[in-house]
Amino acid sequence: MTDDAVTGSQDDAEIEIRFNSDGLVPAIAQDADSGEVLMLAYVSPTALKRTRETGQAHYYSRSREELWKKGETSGHTQHIREIRADCDADTILYLVEQTGGACHTGHQSCFYRTLDGTEVTERVFDPETVYE
Image 1 (spheres, rainbow, N blue to C red):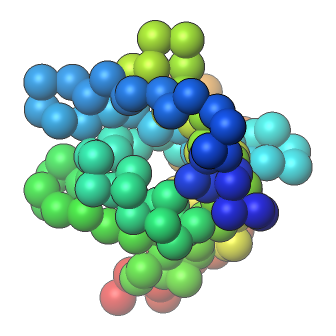
Image 2: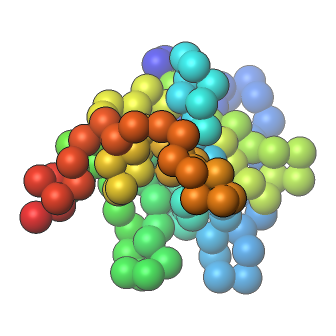
């Protein structure tokens, strides 16, 4: 990834992200090579800034009310290739190189089951050994 992919080229007009009343915006993480949607989480201005500075995905945990770097505990990191904004600038897309599984349940993607509960993918790691 080039620095411009994370920080934006100086020739481009900077897009102003429209954070919601809680100061957050949804962020979709998508595998940059396969196109698989890996997860949806929320990003604060600080998380987005840290992501752009480091090239590693950062999010804001609503349950813990804190910034978190993806993979800090599990080692299953997301290296940012590109960050995109949707047409309304109220949702962002992280195109990532995923190391390990993206989901805390042990699956590659958080979208591993159908609405009737059928699991459509296998686990790629055992969460009990990762999150002891």
